[in-house]
Image (cartoon, rainbow, N blue to C red; front, side, top):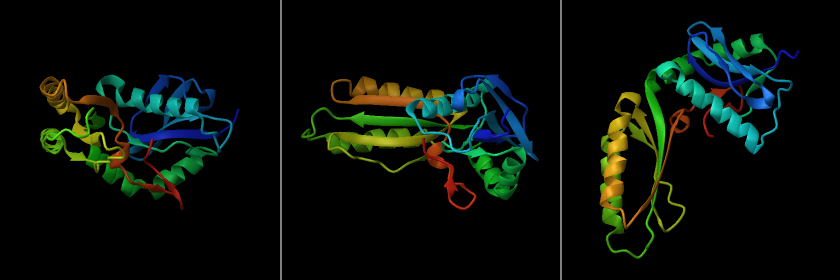
Length: 214
C-alpha cells in the first residue's frame, strides 16, 4: 500500500475517522496530528491526483462531512491536489505553516461560508441599484465578512460569499427568506452552502502552493 496522503484541510487537533468517498477512490478518511493541529487525509496512490469533476466533488464532499461532523467543526480547507509522499512530509508542511494555520483557525473559529447570487430578470429596472444597496446592507448586517461583489453579468446585482457565525446561521437564513418574500417578482436568488470558508483563507503551502479556492 502506498504511503501517499491526500490532504483535504486542517482542524483543531482531534482524532476523526469517517467512511466517505474521497479523492482517488478512497473510502476512509482520518486525521494526522501535528501538535495542536490535525490534517484530514486519505490514502492515495499518487502525489499528483488528476483534477476531474468527480475528484473535485469528492474533495468538497469530504470537507462538507468534516464541517458538519458531530455538531460542526471549523476547517481550514486545502485547495484540490495537495498530496504528500508520507506522513513525515505532511507533518513538515504543517510545521512550516503552523503559525499561519493557527492564526487562521482562530480567525474563522465557529464560522461557515455561504454563497449568495441574486439576478434581476429585467436589467433596465429603474430600482435595481436601490434593491442592490438594500439587499447588500441586510446581508452585511448578519455576517462577519464578505467578498467583493463579482458582477460578471449586467443582470447580476449580488454575487458574494459571506462569512457567517455558525450560531447565527438562522439569522442569515431569515434575511434571505425576507428578501425572497419582498422581491419575489423582481429577483432570482441562488443561495448555497454552508461551505468551508475558502474565500476567507489565504495560506501558502511550500513555495508556490496555496490553500483556498474550490
